[in-house]
Image (cartoon, rainbow, N blue to C red; front, side, top):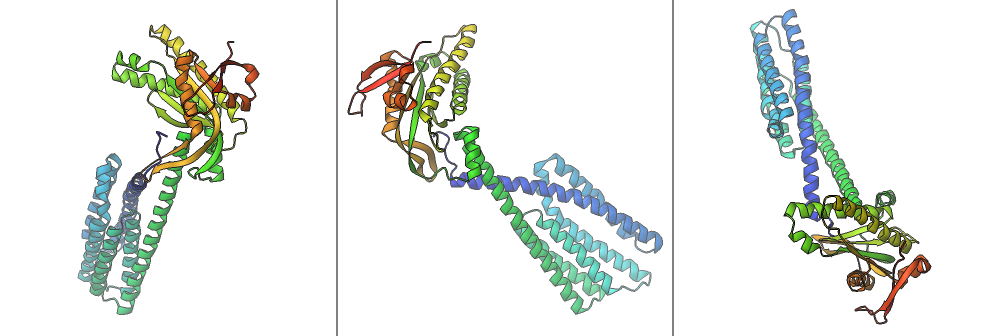
Length: 417
């Protein structure tokens, strides 16, 4: 198919893009959460300042921290680039500012002759640093998370030594931070796994949507069937090709040629999907489809004939619009043949196509080419006509020799309405 299987490098790029999107979303969430946390804790600081005088410097530092956090949150909402850069705020601003704030509190308490209680210091500071580690883990940056842990352990140790915390309490606090770090790592790994799974599923859905009708794609997804597995199937192959399109295209500007081809292909693919067919590939102004795979389709020959008729009808509607615009009509030759094929992902690892190959495909392509010689828009092999039970409804054209076919083949076309 011209719609190629995504190469491994493309799959990695898709997953990286999904992870980058998730990281950006989490950065903005962390930036908003920081504002909320600082807003609440500022009120706590103000409460203690009112009830127990002592550390206005801490409140001023807290206020400046809140203002800068609000600016970061606002900037990250407006700019992706700014949001990505703001991820380092957790490690290089939140922790140092909190450390300075706590030292300011200690200094104020000492000046007012208040004793520093080691237990709340050890518990409260540890909890806050643990919260910062969890927020850092949400950013899905493993190196930054490691740096956050190291910096948290160093700053926490400095504060605990200054507060005279017992060594046993310091050890428990360090273990608590490392346990929080483990939770952050596990949560990050789980997030990466979920994003990867969702990305893979989305790519699989998109891939199936390119190849198959919506009904077939849905059934494949429900059955979790591996559509790339090689197998031999009985199918009906259809080739369609616009006649003299090169000459038409030469008289048109490039963008108009693309627009015209897109409108033709859209109408043809709609007819293919409406009849349960699988789009195989676009070939410039041509198209290839098959019926009967990857899902079983006992009436694949009849479906292919209905599709060929629908394609001719769709082309007629396009020509009606072209006539109103004063442009020449388009003509299409269609060849249809039934038989065995090899079906599966074929090609190099970096560029594979889910396609059918074999003698049946060659015959269908040559029938399409011979519509020029026979002067009919659709040529249908006797094999397809018999399988569809439609020989009495079709008009026999001739018995013709086809390159690659040992015996001459009887061919049919649609009877005039």
